Amino acid sequence: MAKFYAVRAGRQTGVFTTWAECEAQVKGYKGAEYKRFPTQEAAEDYLRGGSGKSEAQPSSAPKDQIDVYVDGSYAKGRYSWALAVYDKDGLIHSDAGIGTDAKAGSMNNVAGELAAAMRAAKWARSNDKSIVIHHDYQGISSWVDGSWRAKNDMTQAYQSFMTNYRDIVSFNKVAGHTGVEGNELADRLAREALGI
Image 1 (cartoon, rainbow, N blue to C red):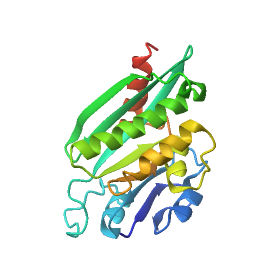
Image 2 (cartoon, one colour):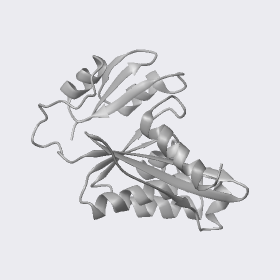
Image 3 (spheres, one colour):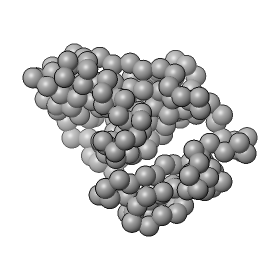
């Protein structure tokens, strides 16, 4: 399936057809705004200030594809995870909790990020949905697509787990703490789970 990356704020704006082209415009760019879309029309609508949720989606695009924002937090030796699920009408589900794997805790907030992504994938499968996981930590997608090597037990387990969900999960890197509603909510829920 073709993918189109719309950069609304970046070094260069426009629609790009590869992640590498898009990343070159937004990586390290403060206040970058970008999203991935299944159609060029939806990407162009987003560039014009729309939501990118074009009415004229081709029938091959999953109609139930929804957005899930994930995040993790860490404080005083404990980590937490959180996720926020949105469909075209807004927030439909959120969840958060404290991580229980002491060994994973050595990865600080990254452990929570990974836990949140895995829970998002499980939620998608149990609700028969196709999702885009929006994340602000690069490893969430890079350990899955192999652009980062999984070097420890936790990242290897994450990589292995996510291979079972590649048919229903895709990824979109967002800039953290830039006012993206779902990302801010997941961050807040993760912190609240730890009481911070």
